[in-house]
Length: 314
Image (cartoon, rainbow, N blue to C red):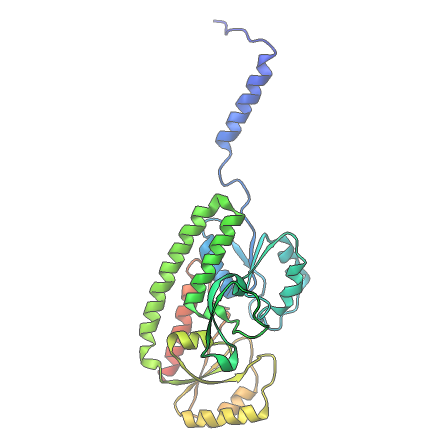
C-alpha cells in the first residue's frame, strides 16, 4: 500500500513541527539550571539549605574554623562570589571584609539579612536589654546592634522568610517549593525551640561565662544567666583590669561554667579559671561540626542547648 504523496514544500514544515513537539515533551521542567546560592557563614548556610531543599545546594564562603570577624579574602573566595547568583550574609556589622567586595559585584544578588529581614535586634554589649524592632532600615550605625542574629530562633525564622522571598523572585519556577520549605522550617524550628525552652527552665539561675560577646540573643531568648564574657572582640586581647574583675566574678560565682570557642584558644582563659570552681566546655556559635542538611539549624540549636545543660549540671 502506498502512503499518500506529500509535496516537498510541506515536508520541512511538518519535520520542524515534529521536532518542536518532541522537544516540548522531552524537555524536563527542571532543565533550567538552578540558582547558585552562597552563604557567608555556616549558620546561614544551614538556614538557606532548609529553604532550597529539592532545588539547589547552598555553598558557604568561610571555611570551617574561620572567623567572620577576621577573615581575609582568597582567590577561591572571589571565585565563589563571582559564580554565585545570590549571596546571603549578615551585613557589614559582621562580615566587614565583604562590604566593599559585594558592592562592586554586578552578577550576584546581595542579601544582607540584618538589613532586609524583620528582626528583633539587640543593642551591642552594654545596651543588650534594649530591643529594637528592625524592619528593613539600613540607617543603623556600624556596631550599634548585636550582629549574631542567627542565635535567636525567632530571627532565624525571619531570615528564612527573607530567603524564601528573595529566591522566589530570582527563581519563580520554584517559588512553590521555596514557600513550602519555609513553612516546614518555621514549624520545625518552633517545635524544637519549645522543647529547648522547657529543657533550660531549671538552669536560668546557673552562672555561666562565655568567651566573647556573642550570645546576647541566646541569653535573652532562653533567660540564661551569662555573668560576663572574656572579650568583646575575639581578635583582641582583653585588658588586665577586665581579666582581674572577671577572675573575681568567677570566684564569687562558685559552681559556674566557662564556655570556650573552637575558633579561639587564648592562654589567658586557663590562667583566669585556675583556682576557681568553674567547669569548662566548648560552645560553638558558628556550627562548625554540624552536618549541612535541611534540619541542620535545628541540630545546631539543640546542640547549643545540650552543651549548656551538660556543663551547668556539673
